[in-house]
Image 1 (tube, rainbow, N blue to C red):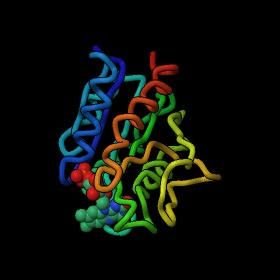
Image 2: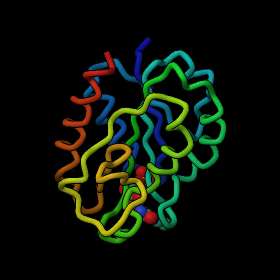
Image 3: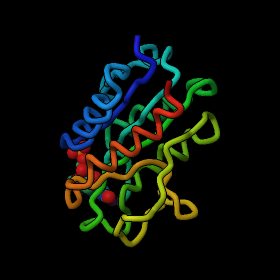
Length: 166
Ligand SMILES: Cc1cc2nc3c(=O)[nH]c(=O)nc-3n(C[C@H](O)[C@H](O)[C@H](O)COP(=O)(O)O)c2cc1C
């Protein structure tokens, strides 16, 4: 069994595509789960989790995560290491860019070990609660405006995660 589980919620497919890119960079060591149907039992044995969400509404969590997060965050995550990525649109939603990551962060950050925080440099937007002290709580991706940067952002992030996810 792989050690890494990638859990994603995606309304239009962008987050799913990024989740697949991340999986491919782990060379067969990661499994993909859509949170619209995953059961807690299926992911219990994985020590490393990557959680991906898109942002909807005004900085809100993707709908399938909305249902799954309350269950997920009640599980025992104390022996897990977790990283978050979030999709957003920094032009049309510049005041809440990729803010859904903060909803996941708030639910789990005191229950688990979080890694994969990203410096704010290189992103253009007005505001996001997912930034704490100039650092994103996870990896923001903008497929609507900055799709040409997605591959390099994901590759750099996965290279960092690999230092811990062995
Ligand atoms: C109704 C709606 C609301 C959105 N709200 C936000 C938002 O508040 N912040 C943001 O960064 N992006 C927002 N977005 C942009 C999406 O997060 C973005 O297009 C993302 O790539 C969609 O990913 P998905 O196809 O996996 O759902 C919104 C998109 C829609 C359709």
